[in-house]
Image 1 (cartoon, one colour):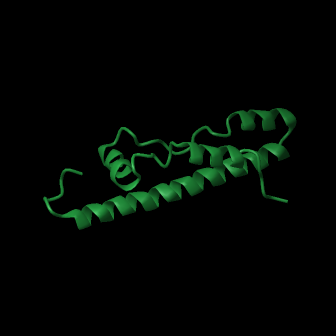
Image 2 (cartoon, rainbow, N blue to C red):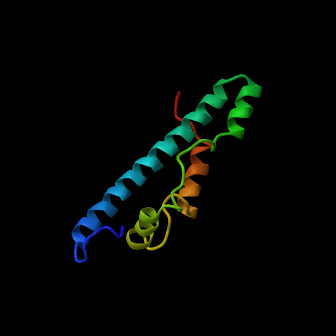
Length: 103
């Protein structure tokens, strides 16, 4: 985020806040995908269900630790804790991998 004129912290904060909103959306969508995959795996024939459970975390959103703006967001807005790659979020992902909600 080196393109901001010096002293334009308000604009930088708004961009950081926007990234935070997008990251929260990504987290919610990933958790929903994991939960639905789990539920679907229980409704498929045994072999297909097992294969889906093996891939329950595959093809989720990409990670952005290579992108300068994201690194700055993690540093300034998240106290150097990547919201998409930390113990708390990983725990939520594992929890969703073991609970469906469709009756």
